[in-house]
Image (cartoon, rainbow over all chains, first blue to last red):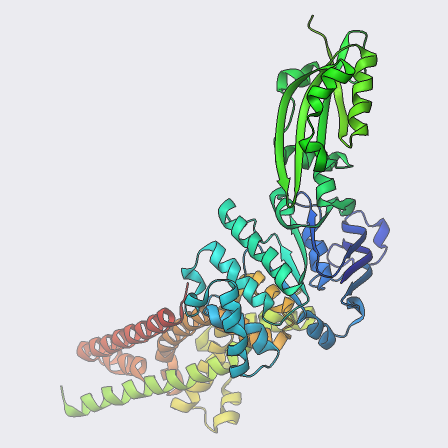
Length: 357
Length: 217
């Protein structure tokens, strides 16, 4: 439904457009060679720190930002080659919601939702028929005549969602849609987005800096850093075993699963004669239900000291995470790690600590 | 006070209202579009046109920098061409309008500047054309600010119209100077000033009321 190929965006300082682009030291590269494919009906998240290029990326999809290079294809249409009029037509099929809602203050809820339909030249009666069910869908049918100033943040975003859906788009772009909301409201807005995705089969591309958002509604996630997509994975896989350092940082921040500070200071990179490994274990699916730790003690003769542990549910999957010390002779702990890996656990050796004994 | 004097004052009040009304309406009709144009042709805006923007900006600044009393005299040939005479109330309306247009334009531009760029971006994401953005987003959202600007303009026009006497324009200011100041008639002076004060209060209250009515924030 959405395909970006080799998309780049470079900002040039005023008055020096394009001339000697690559060599211009003042040019700012916001995106470089981004490839992204979002299939019909899926929810794809792009997560990254501020300034990583998330906003530019999502704005390139509906050409609020025109890419400096590459191709943007939405619903089979090459966006970068459309005329101004055709681009406006194409945008009717792409809804967008924003961090700060961007509702017109001088229009009430009904008229805000009606705006995209007015822009399409729809008749007043037809607009009414379209708007009222949408207000019901987002749970604001009793607020039709309120002005945005009287609404809470969550209600404003609901209006914005209804407005984005009014033109019956195939794609919804969410630009940090929950970043200005409190956790509880965030949850209800995400539930609404998931509901819309399932009920209408809407394809959703969202950008966020919150793992919570990715965890609760995304099917796939891309990690963006310095204008490049550095990692892409199924959400379950990403939470089990991110492949990049940045991915691990995001995950650790989110899970608050770090070895205790005192231990981190004692961690050594290479094993010594009298050290044992500290490992981070991630397990999902059947492994969660298997009593692996006690088996480890019995079958490998290794004691396990659990430093931290957590069970998260990532949509339908259950994910167990643990940080543990494996106590035993070097060959035994080596064996234990192999044993765990053979049972579909993701094992990451964080380091080695000297034995106390 | 003689009935002739009362008639003079009445006549002058109507002249002032006439000059302010005509120049105010014409200045709004021309100044609001000019203000919109100043805003939308800025670099990066929905109808970005840096050269046109530069030219309009300079023209507006020139219009605003000429002292009204000089402007009035300087454009006499133009006034004569337009209304057929260079003296009288109608002749005063021309420079008043000319002075007010750039004034209105800058105030409208300022009002548009207050609108969150996110609203324009949202409209663009819905596939709005630049004209639709002006008609359905910019003007409605800036309505309160534009009315505030027009109120300031009308009040300024009331005081500018006092100088209309220089081209025989009549009105309260002219009456106050000729009878009150030149002929040492403090009563007339006081009455004209009082009427001007009431007039300005009235315009300001009306403006405030309209802003309140359009404000939804």
